[in-house]
Amino acid sequence: MIRSILLYCRPGFEAELAREISELSTKYGPGEIARTNTGSGYVVYRFTDATSALACAKAVPFASITFARQMIAAFDDVGPLSPGNRVQPVVDAVAEAGHLFSDVFLETADTNEAKQLSPLCRKLAVPFENALRELGLLADASGKPGPDAVRLHVLFTSTDNALPGVSFVNNSSPWPMGIPRLKFPAGAPSRSALKLEEAWYAFLSDQDIAGMLAPGLSAVDLGASPGGWSWQFAGRGMNVTAVDNGRLDPQLLRSGLVRHVRADAFAFVPRQPSYWMVCDVVEQPSRIAKLAAQWITRGWCKVTIFNLKLPMKKRYEEVVRCKDIIASELRSHGIRHQLLIKQLYHDREEVTAYLRRL
Ligand SMILES: C[S@@+](CC[C@H](N)C(=O)[O-])C[C@H]1O[C@@H](n2cnc3c(N)ncnc32)[C@H](O)[C@@H]1O
Image (cartoon, rainbow, N blue to C red; front, side, top):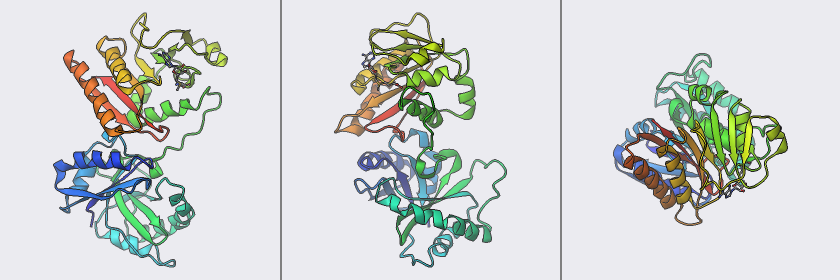
């Protein structure tokens, strides 16, 4: 029976995620954290009532959970599994729920120890698909999944224990283990380029990407050096003002789309409004949050993505504090907005925020 919420995270952030899900889930019924081992890369929240977990996984917007890489409504553990019979007991356990799965992901947590189970997952992939298909539980790959479509996840926590569950296709990460497989783009001046690309996938729909990252639109990149984020915008034919006292990649400047301004991000005043402002400056998170909110309230940009470097301690509290700073700044100007803060795969001790004027 589905009774829990299983969330994946960056190992080391289980406590933050546990606090977050405990607060978010109260609306759906009583429950408690069942598993939150530091460094394990996942958290399990168990509801008292059987119907709450599915309702929660469907209704809590995945994009709004800062520390979650994936959100799954989980069955109970299946085990101990014997080496010759690891598939059928799991398939039998999930069959009773009566779902038609759009896909199946066999997964491990994102730790070195857990990833030793990856070869086992690869070996079991086809047997799982066959067993599900035989029972009519796997949908045809063609066709767009409907609004209630669910994917099957099987998290192997050891060679003889599996934790199966379902995620709503429209309210979850589309990537196995919640980890986007992005290739480092040839020619990008820094690895940071991947961070902005991941943020776009995390926060924007396909339609948004087409409309908001289009040639002719403009962006200001605060703390731009050596230029990975500016490179991403320029690669889409957008005009970029790159603000940094540091040097920019000469190749990037040759594109003709990037103007380098040597200035302090906190003192910089744009000549005219731009569509985007992005900021990767390493500074106190509250200072960056305030700066981003001011760019919106002053009408200097419509949308912003910025990085918040978290302190060693009280990381959850810092995220809440930044949310409050932004909300109160925008509220005082009567501006409706959307704010999402997510720890992306390419974020280490940091989170990425997306703020948009509505
Ligand atoms: C993490 S790096 C940015 C990497 C960049 N996003 C990329 O994709 O290549 C941070 C940058 O912020 C710049 N920086 C730090 N404080 C700044 C400030 N007050 N104003 C402008 N730039 C600043 C640093 O010079 C540094 O180049």
